[in-house]
Image (cartoon, rainbow, N blue to C red; front, side, top):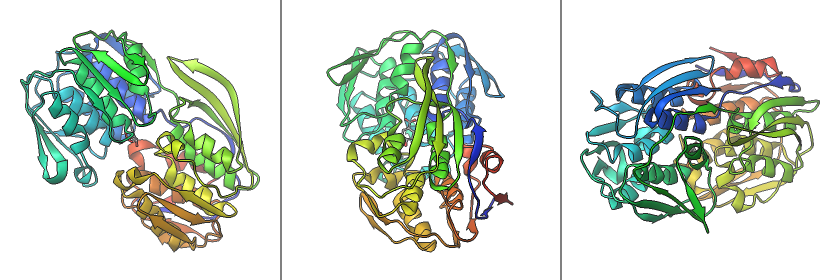
Length: 432
Ligand code: S3P
């Protein structure tokens, strides 16, 4: 599928973007391992989260739905998974592969994890290393790439692991392995990363301790089925936060957005750039903060992005680069080498498309320098990366001519219905 994005005017109206991807994955994982029946509302019916559903079905878990974001999971308990008949296909989803590795490392059966072309190139050594320290046996292709072959029948022992990179996926992998390990498993992080695993474990009645920067779980407990209410994904909202900020005349209300403080870096960065974002009716839903966000057009200025915001906005940089392209002056990002190992090398992918659109930019090993300017017309590549596709769609709010965006199928991994929803508030996307 291709998008043809015609120059558009303002973004106006009210929308609720689909459910949070990170929480959707975790709801299936923890619901499957719980005792009893878990009901999930607001589940993201995107391909990544559906890959997690398919994996647990393949391991004998009965899951009904999703229908209109409702999922019913008949939990089998921490030791109730059954051997899958073949390899588990995680599609495009790094979260599924990394978190499942942790859950599978301590099972009685062997398992194999595979994915699509992008996922098969992504680094898994970062989860293999701590899992092996716990006693797991995992083989991979060269340099820790998938497929991962995980040996069953290993007894895991709790460890303390100092995370070498700020990664919620690695943290979650180790903590989830800790649920079936002997003794205590603990981690420290170089900086805060999204804490949905810790919050949701508590929501399922599992004790997660947090003392002096150390997060720990004791193995051998039990998860109790829960009702999970998933808010709208701030990472999907980010396209509209940027879009409404850059498009003159915009006034857009984004409903029920997840406002977990480990995810709100995009708001902090946009606000530093001068964005006008009002946080309305902040509330807590099922252990996660939520709010409505009203965003109006405002002139943006280039900034040096504080490095402490990087892990808190890690998925939002492609959209933020469009904000930087529309800002007055220079925006500098550093400390973000992780962007090079996402669904695509997001520094290179965005640099290429921005250059094609006439925006001067200089990629660096761990970031990019972007000079604000005027975007023209171009055909841009997405490198099969959903967030690159949606970022260039939003760019059409300020481009002087149409932007043709190649290979947009992967948008469905995180944001099914993106084009329809975006057109409903003012974008002009044709898709074929
Ligand atoms: C995620 C963590 C982040 C993020 C990814 C989802 C998660 O990855 O980029 O989209 O759900 O834990 P890292 O932990 O590798 O930074």
